[in-house]
Length: 432
Image (cartoon, rainbow, N blue to C red; front, side, top):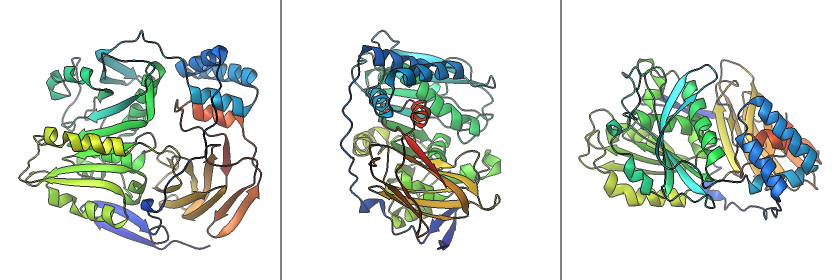
């Protein structure tokens, strides 16, 4: 086995691991090109069936919708085209400012404010931004009224924005870096996709103070749904320290997969710009896609926001999500959650007490995979990136472990479709 020599970085209360074997795989090395998209041919019946799948809420409804689709589509390629085309969206949907509550399987209530443009047009795909508030550590519960965001007084201007905006709530029993919120935010996104026509590759996550630390948590642990992360007047140590409700080990190498826009105030008494310098130095070293701004004389506030708004908007436009990246890296300390990034999953660690590391590069039909501390892993394949009429080759730690034709599987396609992401669909899965 060709093992990676890991260099451990311990800076300002957080830990990151960098593998020397992977450090040369810079995101700037590749100009990502997609195979020509499959031509979409959908009819009224197929659109109705896909709409039923999109709106299915229970497991029974999902299974029934999937069964109907399999019987009607017959082939994987036909169903793939139908799902890409998407459901039928209605113009008769709520717009403006709405207060909504999502209830999870355990009965826990998660309120959020949803703002949909008054001029919403179902024929257009809309970008989405989730905005995470601060001040969560000593807050026991939120009552109705959406007061978690500027005391509930600043929602109306977002009705004129050309995006859908979500303001979820957090409190001391549902911190942004808790597993309940890690489930909650993606589920809210899927709920929105059932009703509104959303651009899957322009979904952004931003936050202020504790909310900024929350945005960074998702970049480190669960980045797949998001195009870019906006981290304002925040710091990663909140995620790791028990006194802040954080108990996570964080691997900074996981930021390789994300785009980050970071702002801190020079004179911030809580998280001054200089406290973020070790993180910024690391991002520069491994060539993460990021931008860091230190506000001269700035405190723990957002007085700078309007001034930076054009630059923030430009960063969004320049950084849509690549739904199927050619290169991925990931470190996880367990396999019950936070063990997958895009099409790459760690299924079993060599030692449950030691984090596992994986790096994968796809070039045509060849996957080059390197691991350390990982016994089992999986690759998800899509016709957007591979040619299923030719053999798929997998090289693991410089040894060919697979070289064969792979059959596409309609069940794999349906499982990926349950995430309601039209641009991130898989038709085969390889397990090693």
